[in-house]
Image 1 (tube, rainbow over the protein chains, first blue to last red):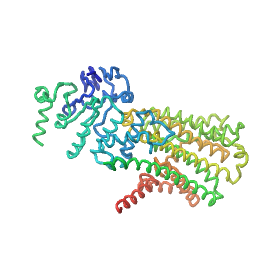
Image 2: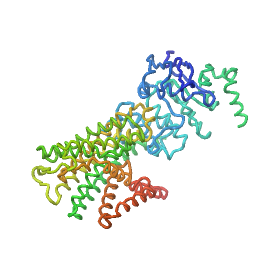
Image 3: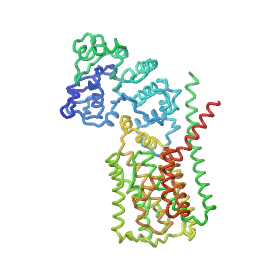
Image 4: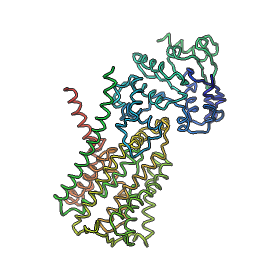
Length: 254
Length: 337
């Protein structure tokens, strides 16, 4: 399988504090990687570096053979490098339908048009409906986002990302803050992501990680200390030390 | 499942139709209110024309503030650019009123491009301070360039030709008022169209969360700059209308005070609807007119009290209050069915 995406030696320091150290990672089409690590390990910083919200101090981000390290966030999105946010960033007064419509129009370069109407745009309505129905959001398509359940808002985050037709998708804790009764819906949505899409997911819920991921990378103190199969991660001494010790502890308390 | 998949399609068309119908009703109501003003207050047409000119200014602030999320205390710079451009053109022999309005719109748009380019470099408080600096700069420029603008004496003696060669701008201000009302209707309908476009929705998104908009792959700066240019054109039309109807252009048309008052009117009426801008202007200026006649010494106190009352009782402005009330009644109806 051909390589779709790669970061090499990605490093970021704020003053003297290195929050990402020499991170290297590659992804193929259809990849499903989970990035785990204790709180403060630099997972979200990693996503910010990859998507261009932050500029790295050193290292490279390569998408489809093109070095995108110097490109801004918008240019990377337009090339297919798309993310979701750990805390949902949605427009509280707009409906899910409006969010997805706006995104599809943007992807087609029609979102800055003045001389056409936004609502009742039949050309994109079909695609918007497909995305919303895939995620089970059709019945709330016309509700304002602030009136719908948080789990549905999380699904909409994924819907917006899908509407951009990404090649590489970075999911920053897609199930964070969702009550456990609703996590199956998120999981269902994750299972139905396009097969060719390369997905990197940050997640704390280990059950979800083990079901979703074909590979696991562990980040601790800004460094990748393990990359391999999910079945191997628990046995790794370094990982245990850095992460699973805490996790096992947290679990026994729960 | 079949049914569920089909409903949205139907709902899409009806909701688009509903929006269109709502705007048609809104514009008709504005026209009706404008004509009622014409019949009810024949002696106050000059004031009413002034209200329309200022309403255009307030609408222009609503575009950048209510839709783009950029607060400004310097919008009169754009209003003044339109007023002086039309005034100077008129003194120099371009006297056809529609041409003067067009000149005002272009001057306002150019000033908007300038203002947007500078203001959008900054954020938050710094942005607000820049807007004040720009209006002061325009004010000082108009003051110093007295050879063209008349300086502190103002630019007087505008002789505007009859509208369409037939309707003279009469002493009672009838032509000026009806001309202004027609302009307002055309501008308002165009703006409702613009804010309902994909561009308008994009602006609303930028106002709420520019980071999210960038993550959707859209640039923020060019979109807001475009909004500034449109906003400048609208403010410029307002300025040109003020120049044509009063036949003078004074330094007060590029003042910080006018900018601040206009922002207050917008907050009073409510942001981000365009209707609120009109409601706020009419109420503020009407209140000012009535109260200053009753008590010329303490009228500002009463205006202040009104503002405090509205901001505390209806944080979304008066139009927000209406919206909330209609929301409540709609929910009651839904419950009943």
